[in-house]
Length: 277
Length: 277
Image 1: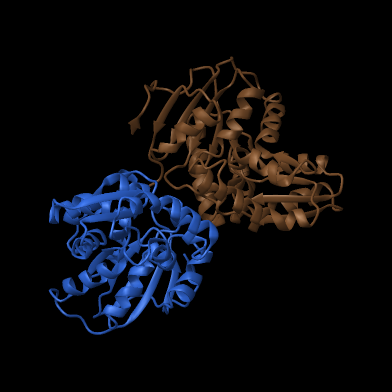
Image 2: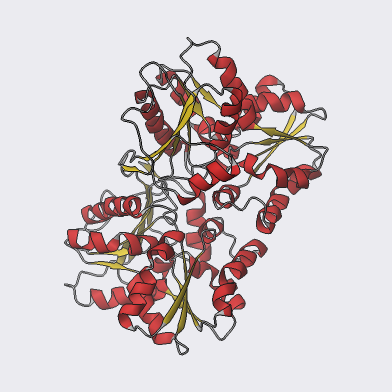
């Protein structure tokens, strides 16, 4: 264990219980930023699996194994609910994991799908995500469960996560790749685009510029935070204990930079802890 | 265990012993291609750690842990020597691992450094690699151990591995990033460039076009294969048993495509096997 920040012996106080949040890397921080806005008096414990990032090209079995290890860790840290702040894990792992845990688990996928259905007027919805998320057709299925009349086009954007992890938010290369990824869906006349990866809100400005005003962007991070707020209202209350504790599975140079500079998050403690073998 | 190909119960025959080779993903296949050319009657067992790819942004502790697990696996499969076909693992893990294993271990770094020293006339050598490799200054140290008069410039190219894993070898985006990464070193007047990542030989054409004829490219894969040939000549001979067996730690779509189409490798067996937790 390597501590970059002074760390109390127990992450949460005896009475308070944190909201557990996890992602493969920094992407889930966009969900954390929205949670802080929606629920300012909650303590959040965030796990970023930086030792095994990225998840987006990995198999359902492997992503499920990683998600289960992290969920076990969050439960052992007394999380009162678990937010799967990663579209790949929400699509591939959440359905099989949720029944095995005593605390409620919530993903980013269903809230995003519901918001997209609400936003579209033309009935043509685009979805972008990792290869694993798009390959699972999880958004298509979730959208069609709400309404069968909608047309969903989905495109895998496997290079966006590495570009974002490098901080190239406003870069010629990122814009070139985005135009290439988005062109077929824009040609098909989508009026709503789901940012189906929690990393993507960091590219919102560039995506909005390419899509133009006629396309509504659905931010899965924002919609997930609202769903967490609703869910929390149904659970027994815990004392206010605002804060953000971070556990990473490997040290990461870019993590703090993006957390503090791009997302303006204040971190109370940061610990690197080995997970699995 | 998921078998994509029919697999014999034991990977190697009773008498033969394979050359064990590993990398985080597909990069080490460039070393395998060179080994097949240099040593056509040898059996090669290749492990690609596709469940945890890429290594290049991870810490020395994490990369060493992963490299140790794979080396243990290769020894249990009776490898007669282990080739660390990954510059990141060669730089970060090999020095501390080699003393712990009874079979010889050889990396890509020292052979590449020696070839660069031999190639340069101006005394100015450039090195490109992952953030971890460049951060370790392993090439600079290896080159200065041979000659202290040489000037080494090194640039981390963290986006090249994801682009290569996506197969974008000849793409506008790859060329734009390469020009950006290489410009400072070309301005400094290097006459030799070490491709300090086993993925990079797949970009050799584009890199050569950007560098021009005045710069010699040093391919660490090629030089590593020659060093393996020399080392093998010092070991007890084993019967000829040509072949290539592949173990991946997670299923990978791009792996077979690049192995067979880009590198013209014939694979005898492919198995996906879970490693660690």
